[in-house]
Length: 248
Image 1 (cartoon, rainbow, N blue to C red):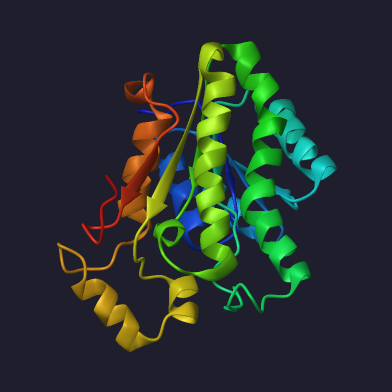
Image 2 (cartoon, rainbow, N blue to C red; image 1 turned 180 degrees about the vertical axis):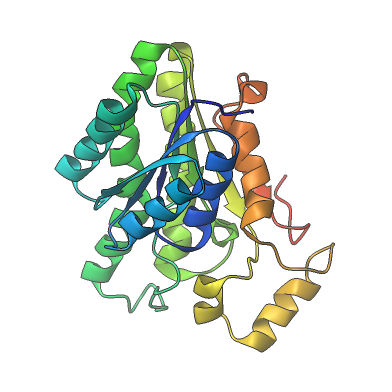
């Protein structure tokens, strides 16, 4: 199997897209660390383990230095190495839409903290292990929102793309690649909370393939970037959106 005995950390993995990514990695032989602030992350890991895969849960606030270091330590103590980090945790389904000129500064800090500082802290936590191994893959989950007017959410995702590029430069000679995936319109619970049905229909019709995406569509790109096939790919942000838009 493609990821046999690889150790993969997925943040925001208690439910939704993150859980599906963890399930798919586990199905390809990976030992999966499900990291999330939610209490039910343990239940999610237990469900994967019940199917015969190897999975553990770590409760973590990605915006906390000590918590992210503890997450990396838990992975090393359980499995001895860290091969892949998927920075999936982010503010979206419960995102409070506000014009930038009206957004509360504390809320700005909160969104930027989870969506940008979080991936930085998680990457800093795993990087020493990956560097010592001479191999590692960090994959940040960005968004098409980075290229749209979407308040602090869009700003945070565009900042995440730049963070991806900068970390790739810093880790490039150590065998560690850093890339991002920017999904387009996804049909899931979080998006349905943000986007009315009529608007979701318009998003669907705006794709070239005339359907909304799902977790498995995004996992395909994540898995490629996590694999040895992408050893010479780094510093990139890939738009996976059914042809909804392109950025040249």
